[in-house]
Length: 70
Image (cartoon, rainbow, N blue to C red; front, side):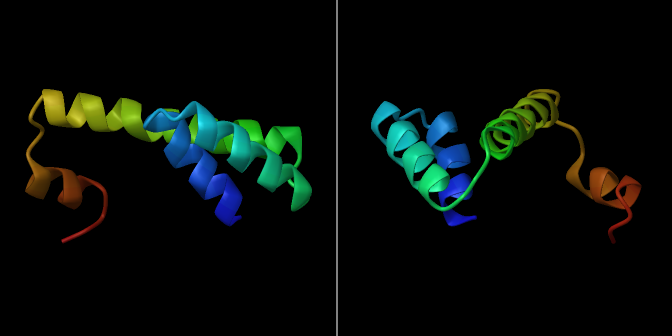
């Protein structure tokens, strides 16, 4: 799990050294190719929406309310 999290972060930095190392570590820990791809895809999705919400200056209080928060 830790290697998958680290891989997701490394893919966004980006750091080729870390991506390679974290991928190898995740495989050694038993992660499947599908799990590795999902970790990277989720990192990309998070970055995508962060770019949209920040760039469009979506009101944070309204966002939290619509997401079921405060």
